[in-house]
Length: 164
Image (tube, rainbow, N blue to C red; front, side, top):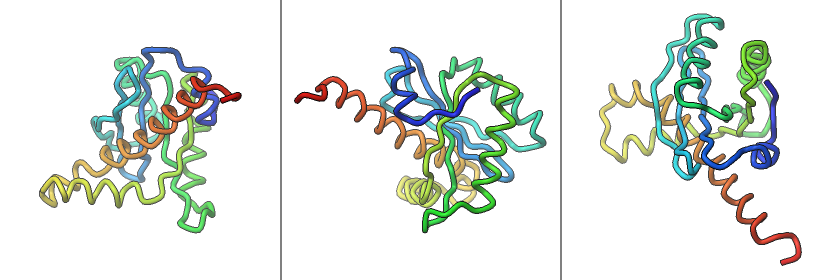
């Protein structure tokens, strides 16, 4: 397993490969999945965190089922850009995953992703109880959509070329 930048991932991905988004919480892991054209992120299930080994096995099983080419994981930096305990926990999780899988990870700044996901669910008139169930996968979808949009921008820039 390696950690890549979004630009490095863009260079490595092949046509038809889908990627997954992860929102790593203390109690759950929200998951989202891209389509094979990597245009749209869709929320998927939430994994209830038990302990690392079981969490990792659940993610790896999901990745195998869905043919995941890479994980985009939200990096919960503070609003001022500094790293706190949640950033350290996320990086430790990714390091531990490196012993379990060769699937690359990309860190993605997730500032305000949960807020945006909550607003989206409210706009869709989702009840408070249902929002609590769906917020983590909705946040993962928001994280993944940002990465997909960036990948699309990279592809457009490469198609135009540096001399244009």
